[in-house]
Image (cartoon, rainbow, N blue to C red; front, side, top):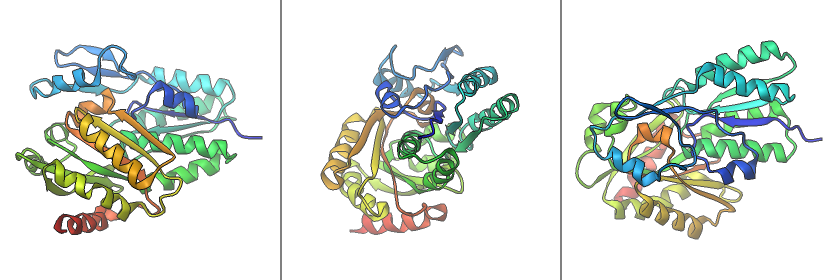
Length: 313
């Protein structure tokens, strides 16, 4: 008999109602977005009240400082308690702990709930990732459950799987990451140079995006895009992709098309960056997330060498 453990994430992922329904992922506990005027509004997880373009266009005025807030401790406790009351073990996947306090908040709440329900197991996994990478981990958890893997085996597998997730893509401007302390001001300056597209992959040691090079213009990015993935993905069969974007839908669609042509994936998700993550990323991102066969190298040194070689070709 398959174990019906629950899978839940924080607002650091980028989901649609269709994705959570298809893979049996629990809906994210409600967080909030802090708007430039200081008001707080519930995170619009599925873009019901405004479009992604409207949201990220507001951010093109850099005076508009958006922020995000994790759910209240009681909100998290109530959600986990409801799942525990139903007799379900729970896997929680959070955005990188270096980007948000979600991991800490869910860990504290899980401890409290397990004291009340001693027969229930709750594991909180720090994804060391953000955005579409969280989608990949949640979907992989669902596939493990469908295959009949038990709770403990799935948790152990996911802790390894998260370390293998790559990012391939660009961000126009590192200003927003620098403002939130996610990257150094020197690197942020590089991202403000006209026509320069900072390229990054995901660093296991820091739990943040590591800038591994820069390209001159979109054409250069798109030329090396499939080759970088080929050099980092390993075996292509049965690999899923998530392509996400903020105000760069045209470039993201081109990435999606390239992935379909070069890798023919059975599962490719195309989704805008969510409001919560978008506060930190800002406009100008187009990236694909996928899992390689091996962990991302320490501080992305191997990935940096691959990119440098491709940029010289």
